[in-house]
Length: 248
Length: 85
Length: 156
Image (cartoon, rainbow over all chains, first blue to last red; front, side):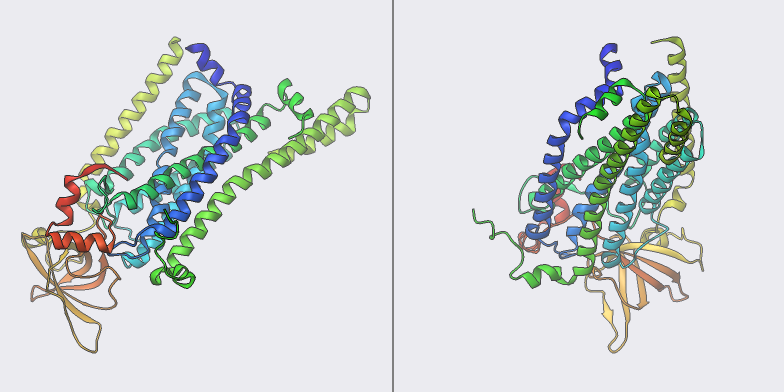
């Protein structure tokens, strides 16, 4: 078990395994995103209240849901960095922070564009769901700038790891804000198996596909940037030097 | 099953109009497309630049190992180091 | 696990739990301030200090919307099915505003007990359905809430 754990943490092992997996992941991502987008734009029925603005929510829900995965991911990676000092974990965490900030921003932007017509406002400071998501965006920017501010990369890794673990609390607040307090933002939708009922398959299958596609996209983007980080940090390693002789 | 059956629009114009919410719907999908593209293209471009840089450094190191004129090489290495950080 | 790793893990867990507890207590203490709006029942029970600017949230009572001709002025009643508060508003209403719709209004209660709103926002609930489904459900006499609660499977 520990041998496997140590192997998993080896940048070289990750680089080689991801080389094999990437084409499949990219293919799955492209197909899922394409099908989900075409479905959402052409086939999704209008909502009885919002009409076609419900199409915005397919993207919004998928990106928002995925954005909540970043702090837990960075916290796990951070714990591994702090406790086991595994190099790979910190490389993943470093790139996750920036990507997570992107996800949070897109969540806020798409939500705002939807809210401007449905709620009648672009932004509400009094809504705890909105504000806690904005807080997550700033926290992730904070993690990114903390790393660039600290010159000692070992110290930076530790500080970011701690901030990531603490940041998980906010994820819980975002998730349950709509249940603990009354908000303008609607709660999560119960899913219905029956077609012809509220939140039936005609709505949630497209959303579920989009969520899968966005998770695949997140994985692909994160793997790509982690591979770059590996090459950068391990550039003096023999296996990287040998790899440079090969073509891309 | 006919694929055109489930389409919610009668015409291309209706599709573009999105029931009067063209701006909001298309703005979100354009933003989403941009977001996905940027976060895939950026790491790929970074990789290209990185590989080019690492290869150049490798050649320089090999040359410095062969010759004794190491000063120029050190300078070039130093420059590359700065570019990378 | 090596002792120093166990110690590190212990410190991390301690920090995580300590901070969670602190944040939890703070949020609990602030919960009334974090709530976006008061319900009509809370207003009826006098939980809102008189003369204060606040937000009220409830449903637009069926058949209560009265628009004035030739102006943007509108009167309606908001309800949480226990208490009701009449609202007066001048301005453009959001697309989703209609009878039976959840709304949040911002403003102040005047001397006559009418809520003078400076802003009205529409809420969308968590149920999405096509117009055909909505019509079928209405025809069957089943309310959307009961129906979806009965077939609840998970959530998105």
